[in-house]
Length: 211
Image 1 (cartoon, rainbow, N blue to C red):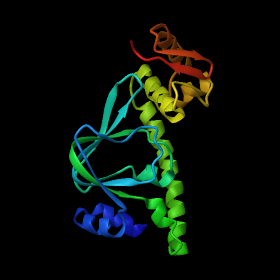
Image 2: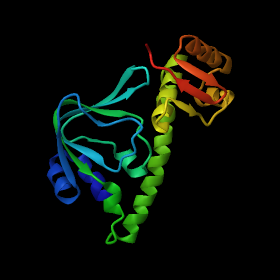
Image 3: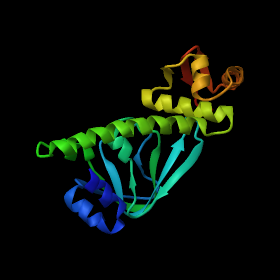
């Protein structure tokens, strides 16, 4: 695992990464989506040429650009390790070529030494914890109440693959999770319902598309 991480950090060694670890190589055109939010993936990407953009898009079409990755950069590594649903979209902003590495397939090989496998297990655990923290930051970083709600509800819709879903929180728990005052949050949910954006009862939500 240490070898993999070191190779990722050194742009000049991309060819070594391809030689030893990459199982797939694909070309993309500007505007294509490589990974969609809500997907569960098993491979990380290495940009060989061009650029990709990491962005958060909510259910109603609002976009936040989180990062832009050029030649030599990597993306989706945490999701490939943990198997957790993506929280972001990966969009091609310039015609590019991507090498894909299936980390789990490499690390689960029968010829992999036990110490390396143990290191991989520990990295997996740490990655999952960091991902949970990243989720919380992504949902609580917007200043406005509605932006926090739309970010969280949009993610739930993508993970559940449905516009209708139940969340794992009651109203007070949701307010605490999003770091909001409960009455203010409930007031904003009522406004969203009156505007036809959502239907909600307790922990049950239905997201409505804008007409």
